[in-house]
Length: 427
Ligand SMILES: [Mn+2]
Image (cartoon, rainbow, N blue to C red; front, top):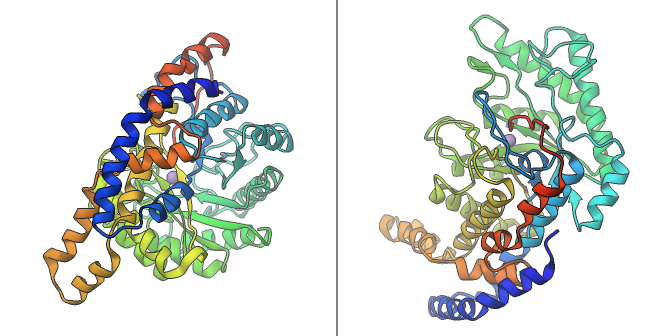
């Protein structure tokens, strides 16, 4: 990890400037009637899970350009995850992918993570690739497959992932299926869905009492004609058919162009089935770019729905927040630090929406003033608040600058073996 003294000195050098910026913002917010301390408390309570696969350099199907000092195994990924948490104070959990990051000894990995102050979030299954030694192929699907033996093998994989997750202390499994067809007529649209539901019933039956099953939809890729769980409607049908511990996971990049994602979020909240998020951003499809890098206003509007639901339902409303990104060009630690910062900014902006005023203008059909409530909150420069929340959690005021000052990656490059490890693409 980074020497805490480096973070302390880095913060010390920037403290006066920070305090001046913060007191200016506090004055501005108090003038507008905000309880700044309450906002800071809520902001400081926000955290998000890191995906194990995003700590190594990602790639596309055209190639991969690994950087020096990237992690070669799950142990080194834990080290890097600990650094992200050290800098941001907001990433105490890891979402593990089985089998990409399957530990030899899960109990030992849990212990190792705890020493870094980390624990495990949802575990992720993988039936979109054939694994060495596997008896049946997933070429034509897994839980949806026409052959019961293939379905049985895929169900057993999910049971295995749950067992590994239990040893890690995880309490949720995320199921994303590549199942689908590339051509009309290739498979029955109805039967493939029915078989998927029947298979998921078997998985759900094995779910420990305190576990959640999260269903992630995706409109296309790798199945280009008809993905079985293609949108939130199919995802919701599955969750509702399975039972109360099944819910829907919204990956922000898993929507067709121009989908109103915040409305999808709102609908799932209404249905009581918003289980969680995979945060990222995209221009075209499942681009897995840094959350908030392309459509920051959309990210804000999604957080606006979350804050709104939290106000209504209290702490009963707790969707799990995870990042799902592929860092092909950026240093993964830097990209994750920037992601967390972007998420916290969107959240802070959403906390500043004057909800009684918004409701008043909505009731009055005062379109421009209703929109103005959102824009005023979105346009507030909340960075001093985010820095202060980070400082209170012993993180870095300027985590990117501090990370570079610490020389962590250079040091990792000199001690880690050259990265022959090939992390797979993101999901
Ligand atoms: Mn995802």
